[in-house]
Every structure is written in C-alpha cells, then in structure tokens.
Length: 204
Picture 1 (tube, rainbow, N blue to C red):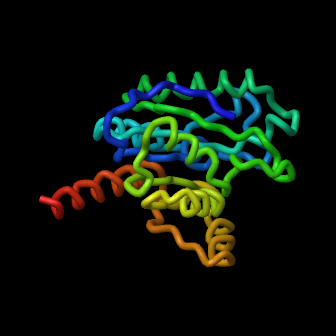
Picture 2 (picture 1 turned 135 degrees about the vertical axis):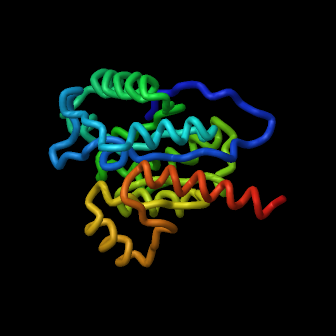
C-alpha cells in the first residue's frame, strides 16, 4: 500500500504534520491519470509551499489514491520512480516529503485505504505517532476533506488547483465543509504556519 521514508519516532506524538493529496495539490492532475514521469508537472508555487513547511518544522506526508496501478495503466515500479523523482526535486528546492502512502485499488475493490476511507492516514498515525487532532490535511477533492474528517484530522484545507467546483458540489451534497479554502499549496502552507503561531500565542 505504501512506500516509506522513515521518520524518527519521538517520545511525544508528532503535532506539526501536514497530510497532502498529490494530484491537484502538488502536481497538475489529469483525467487520464499520471502514468509516466513525463506527465508529472509540479503546480506553480507547490515547491515553494513545501519549502515553507519544511523551514517551519512541519512534516509533510503524502496520502494519494493511485488506482491507475490496479487498472493496469502504470506499474508500482514506475509509480515508485515518479515519487523518487518528485522527492528529489522537492529536496532540491529546500522542501521535504517525509513519507508517502498510496492506495493502488480501484473503487470497486472496497479497500480501507482508498480515500475517503481513512486507512492511509490512520496507518501513518500508528507508524509515526501523530497527534491527528493537531494535524492538517490539504486536498483538492471532496474525498480528501471527507477522509480528514473520518480520520479525526484537526484541520482540512481545500485548494482551488484541482476541480474546485466539483469538490464543493460533492461536499455540499454530503453536508461537509472544509475549514479553509485557499488558492493553492503555497497559500495553504502560509495559513497553517500562521494558525500554529496564533495557537502558540494564545497558549502563552
């Protein structure tokens, strides 16, 4: 289900964690799936947003549905190569993707990891001792926001770089609202950092 970049396990649960969807948040989405490295294109300001998070000691964890694997459109080996290239580019720009979880299943397989099911986030929480109530989720679809709610993530941010109108329609139909709507991952990072700073001031 996942490939991992190990995180150190602290005595206290990790509080500064940001879960990220991939397609439509970090890179441009495609209705035909991202099937090769040549099809992977970072969205404007996403690398800068990831750099900002890393500079402010946030851990970024990718949780992404990749049903193209079980649809036979891409192999796990190719997906791993795409993620390795993505991580190298993020690091080259001063950011870090601390861990990656992906679900290869199609909707009809009924797994527990495909968003909006919370399996990937709950797996990350168990593995890395994450305080989910203090964490944030950044996504571009209704599935991302619903997944955050079902997992108990403290804040769910919806970016406009995916299919925003559909996301809002689907969320409204389910009676779910994101905590924050922002333009892109960069603005999400700014909001998350500011929110932490305000909480720290209130707790002094």
